[in-house]
Length: 200
Image (cartoon, rainbow, N blue to C red; front, side, top):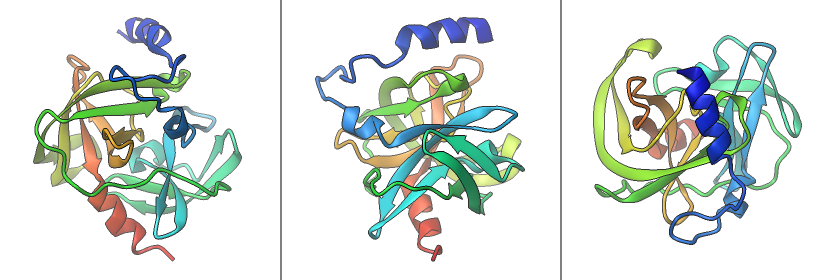
């Protein structure tokens, strides 16, 4: 299965920076980065909140590690929210994605930019299905709010930003249906904002 996914990722790696509706997302993609350690890799992104910039990924991407490599140098883990699967790291950037707290409507178009399995940047397009709550067994958390999305989401897309038609962040991808890879879940942006509000 991983070999098949690798082939698909190579075929869908970003080259034109144009979505199906004609929108150019190159200015958005610059805020998405590959993060790596000696064990593996994941996706992270820069986001702006209250005039401050944060580097964000999933808590399960960070795991027990405290330091990661990015294209900008080394980043250190500085804060974690295990329940909502959020991790914040140090950085050197001065700009980031904008946040949209409005809950998408059913079938609204969305897209994800990420580095699944460490591959070059890959974009996937799909739709919002519903806001739901469920138990995330691999995170050992119960009844946690998520966005359910109809979209090809690969293992390794964890930490990728979920974006709307305004190119704004509405969620953080953190899991996929490993039977089909055609649907996934994301942490709503409101939980990220609540966590960022606690940071100094």
